[in-house]
Length: 298
Image (cartoon, rainbow, N blue to C red; front, side, top):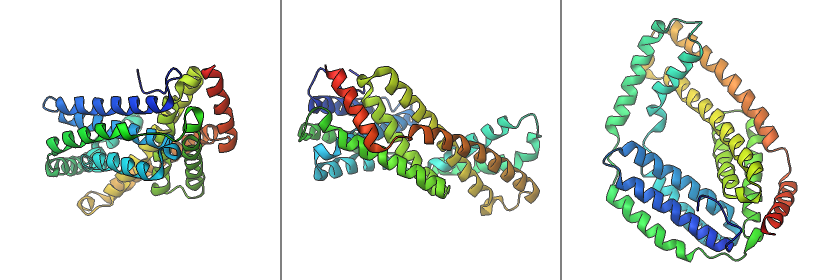
């Protein structure tokens, strides 16, 4: 079975099954690391995000002490292979921005900037330490064994309602904070909350497959908009860094303007989509989803 709760098994059994599957997927990726270490790292990080979304969904029923322990476990696992993502995607971000404005600019004017970004990326990649693959494999084995102790104090919708409502409320609050002050920090925090909501929609998809599939897709779209905005914010910082000071200031300023124009579009789209996605109050959404669970169970 996939990354879904099941109406045909106890909720605790669903949670344990999903957790074990995600850990096993991560273990399989590590075993294939020789062929593609970058993919292995990406897979591990994605599985950890899904596991943390699962933990948040059942947080009250799992118990705060165990939740904190397991959440810290998967957070730390992901951090061990994080590297410096921002520097690594600078060239991709630059290339995408150029492609959006291909008809109106001469890319050759920005060759020097691209060259500096490539140097920064390559230096970051060369400086990254090789992951402790054996240590990661051992940590995943320990995590898998610990899942047997993931016991829930409630079953059915009672096991997930508190976590579902709290995660939704946090994403909704993060939207409000980003609207009041659309800084890089508040937008990035909103994106993290949106990702948790997206994964939880995937987990609850059996309640109403069409509705939760669409909601997960829209949350994915929203996180992509916010992700591109974050990458552009990092590009802005890179343009002002010391290694860029020898590049013609007029060309740097022109690129700054392109970045700001694109970020304005992205943030506008994200706000509109976010206000729709998080229009309901947590209480109203929780009541509605409780009815979906009851219908699906019947």
